[in-house]
Picture (tube, rainbow, N blue to C red):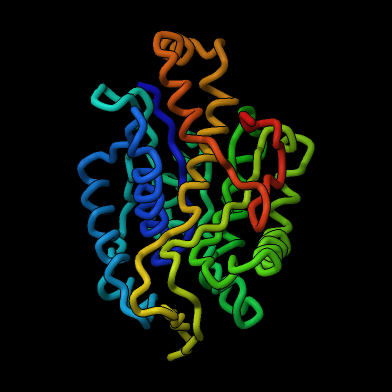
Length: 319
């Protein structure tokens, strides 16, 4: 089985588990009529099932931060992995994707966190940077640095990616984007804010050593699809983001949560699966052409406009 790791950056409670749950939900619906299957391992399936139940049961008005802190899936204080196996329906999977999440305090001065992040950032073919979109867009970005930790994220990527000798993918995924993807103009504003607030990080990726090795893509996701930012309440210096469902009867309808995975699979097709000079990878892949076809089918229809953009190194994707 081919195995690839992805490391997720994002503060606790920003919505990474919701993103992964909605991603699986959308993909499972999309490939339901095909001969392909994506199977989470038992622990991942349990977490996804629990979170999907919560997402589908949201009220017409709620405090998302309180929902996650008090009633949602709380951080365990230790790294957590989400494992997805991909293969032909009814057969042994041939591709394994492991997405690692870690507690927010790992980003600061912490020996355990330093060891974990360094190890998995070196091993991972891709990094997914989850961005809390309301914190970025509202109140002139007042809560962006507190909620999204862009300085710490940049510091880690500079530390590990300097001197990089293999191709990597960086996915910047603004989440909870319902309010900012309602029309083309709003989506363009969101993309512009991402480019502005992560300007120094993007400039680092454009350096001579990394410009041809690091692909960067922005993929906004609407985690729930029918819940929109309403307001911010501040208590004791801590923001509480308030969200509302305009229609109390609106069903759970996530949008674009599958796009980060589609881009990841296109990147793997171009840089690993299609090549024949990777030793055991080539041998394993060469014995089952279905793996290539399965990944190709799963990776179709990557969005490239209305807020979605390949910012750098388009040629590192199988297009």
